[in-house]
Length: 216
Image (cartoon, rainbow, N blue to C red; front, top):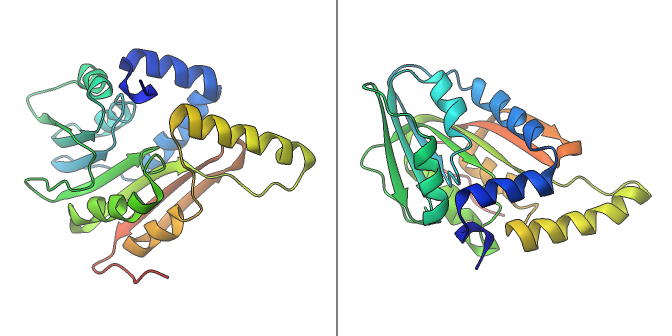
């Protein structure tokens, strides 16, 4: 049984054990989400919502609107549902699926993908980014937070990075790829980016391109 098929509470516990800096990673994401400046009535796609860790900072900004949360793991989606707080003006729609072929009933204003694109197989990466792009309005904005491993410039880094990559791949199924950011930038114009090497994290804020740029 893979990690993503375990109870969502167990997944959260494993993530806390292995990432140590989970709180700092959450702050990186929260800073990126704050830059969206969500307005009442916004439609949001949480692509690969996992156990719903992004839902709270989104809810804190959004008093009125609609959130579509997509997740491939039923056990993790169940945990996300428990985290959601429906109100008379804020609606949640949870969708079980891998998100690659998703077609929402309406285009969203904003999309969020937090540590969800990195778990795709290399040949699925572009399809995942394109699925997010396809379900957004022409002026839509996106926040993508994922793994970025800087170059190993020190002896400690050269020793540590193989261990890190092993844990990412074999525990979290994170197939970290340096193709991620170039692929994202083909579909979204960069507005802002925050790189945090100590947390092996990157937070990208972008605007949807009308037409995706051709691949290399």
